[in-house]
Image (cartoon, rainbow, N blue to C red; front, side, top):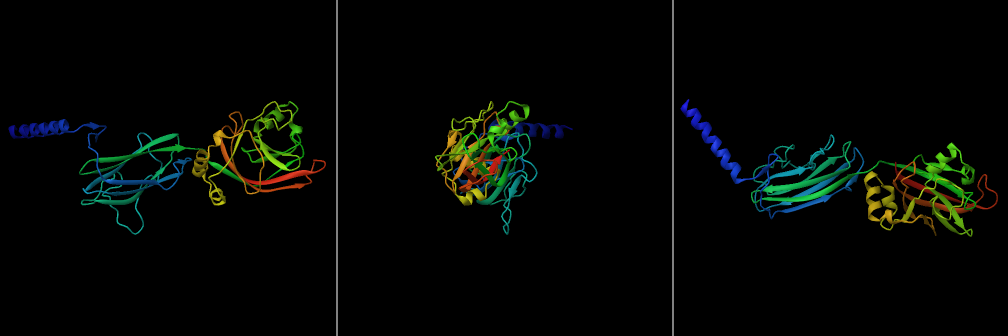
Length: 320
């Protein structure tokens, strides 16, 4: 009995000494010194995504000391199913276990990836990716943002005859509404349409083409509800970028080109232009980003409009 008590006291003392040497928080040691390891982490996708989307980090590291672990901490926001380390095809995993990122003995280089799958009920996730080696710890931090999913509308057609007799577009449903003067009378149905219209197509002097929000002075139909959408040319995008727009890439380019700093109308439109927009807070598709590409602008006769009209054809990708 005496020997058992002595052993217990011995282990308690050892534990107390161990705890006094190192600081812990939530079970993790937190008093590591800085490691001088080379830790290179690159996002292979945008740091934006909708629920179910994957954010992929490429992790490459090299140390003069043995690497003990690679730790990904996303606080209380655990990723959805599929979250975890990704080992390149044809390579041997450097990990002893994939749950905690413990590294095989005598490892001084790493080349792997980590996939974070966005779950429900998240908006912003602060991710810290840390390498722990025999020298210390090195950490890089990232912010992952949840954004709305997107929908694409192909070959959308808008016609215009005057600044009031013109077509409007709803990004929520992808619906084109013909002849805005028909919705100016105050009725419950017309009010619903007015709130749904995010932009209209207008020409001036039969030459200059404009996209305008109902709020803009170029639009002259007598609406009571006038959404204040914003427009901006996308200087950082080309056709290849538009063709691969996803939930994450749309949000990425919206931030990169600063759609929030756009104006309520945009003129001198040309075929091939790529235009970003943001809908009004009061819109039925409230505060959403979108990007469109103009495929055609030409004079024509449009049904219901007397005299010369103009037609614009475009592809639209928008958050919903």
